Length: 499
Image (cartoon, rainbow, N blue to C red; front, side):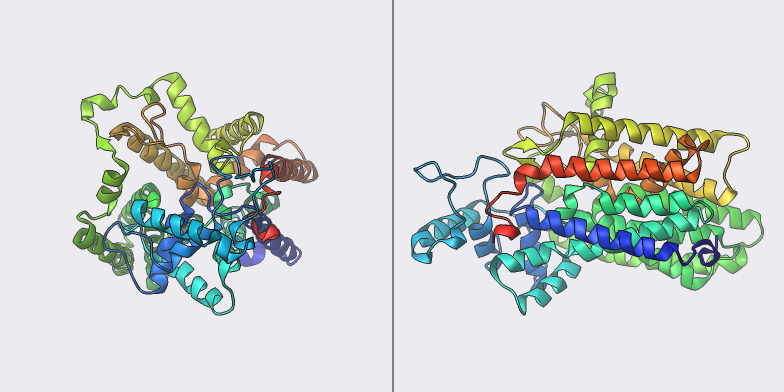
């Protein structure tokens, strides 16, 4: 699967435009949303600031003194309640626009409340995002302060998503070098993705990029008749980076491990094991050593190899006995559908709240769920056909994609049934499901390749012009529906446009 002959010069400007579109898209909505969103932005801000000072937490820490004024001064109540109003009914202006004398006591009160109540439950989260974001924070701090510095940190997502758009195009060309529709559809979907996670400070934004790189390298390694050391080491480091981005990538790493075992067996059966054994050992070491180093850090400082136990205790979750797992409503038709449909809709759109109500429309959710299930069904049916309409390499990539999707859903189904969530707000005893599609974003690149492939198979009887018209209509739907859904956010006096 040589990319050089597959990508004409005329396609490169289109990919560059899609990168710019993705960057502009993320910039606009990142600027439109005020602070602090319901995906624990304060928590991630606190960790970024700590990493900027070389202060890696060893426990669930109170807020750092540098992050504390940002938390106390620049937050809004609009995500979870109606905005504060003046006695005459007008909206209260943001505190930082008032004279300092009039807000000093209020800010000090907020800081005291954070000191008393705040514990950083993400303290044991893998370090890669925070290391990158802390360098970005240090750069911005040299010429910005206040609200602009906060937005500078959020705007780190702009180059990350632009890189992700490029990576999506690269991966699509790797798998379908002859199919122009899929090659452009995958980066176009990323550029227009209405995923609110990309508009906030959080460690989910790095997961699709790190595992996406690993996905491309795994496909290259599979296609190689003999595994070369450089490719093996690069693949191992990419897998390590995926782990060090977020633990939600664990099911994808399990899928990758199974994929590598099959590759090793193929090499053994073909008699080429001897020349590939050492490179595969290098791959294992390149992946395992960074992971092991972080696991040891967590074990020493947090008491377990993932650091999850302290967070579970903080959230007051309890392990359920094995016999109680099968009583979970996820095993009913209604519960299973709730789990699948809500994960798919939030995978596309995120889970942001405004006035304590989801920024979503049921009709739009239904479109994403039906389109996704339909496209994946067409892609699966094509894979199962005999003979399949794909090359062996394409089948391998598609099956790896399906394995990633299945592993992600199985992992979060397991977490849903395993815990009693007690008095937690989300997940809860009333709705005991992990339905945060953002936690599955690591699989974004292989997922969109499957999605675009399914659309291509659905329209296989039509000319490319028709396929691209349908693609343009779907992209327009994504952009227009997102603008309509998020419109209540735009007038907020707390966002970057009004700052």
